[in-house]
Length: 173
Image 1 (cartoon, rainbow, N blue to C red):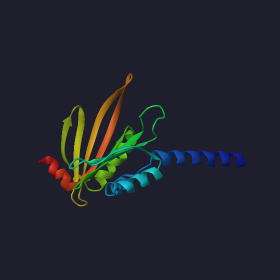
Image 2: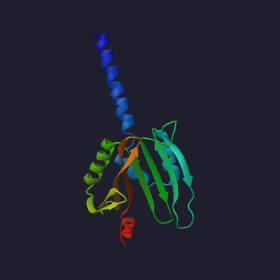
Image 3: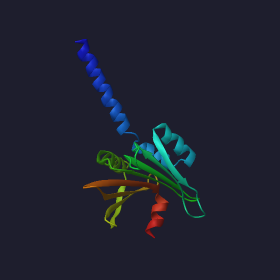
């Protein structure tokens, strides 16, 4: 009986460990990160086992960029997810890209549960692009679904961009 309890506890611990790793960043954490500066983002992502991939300095009106990967392969630059943060004098944007359909579904559900409404939809270079806007929190979300071919299989890529509502409005002009 004690052996069964130990095995059950071990299985539960393994499940929760896997669940916490696969659920690395919640959407509310991404929203908070989108308002941080580059140093704060690096510290928070590093603490959550994201790997720094590189940086490009801001050059006049062109954004400065930092990139991170989660669960990156040792052999190439593939990963479960990528985050890119872009900062300029006037605007910041945070992108997260994942191949995890379940995580994408959670993020999309969170966007909608905030009260965000679909602004418009378009296609761009084979990708479906949807814009959600939320004037209550002064944020907009660009949601992109595209496909990539890897060997003999097709992989869906899900990318969500968090930007200010003002930035979104300027993109429409």
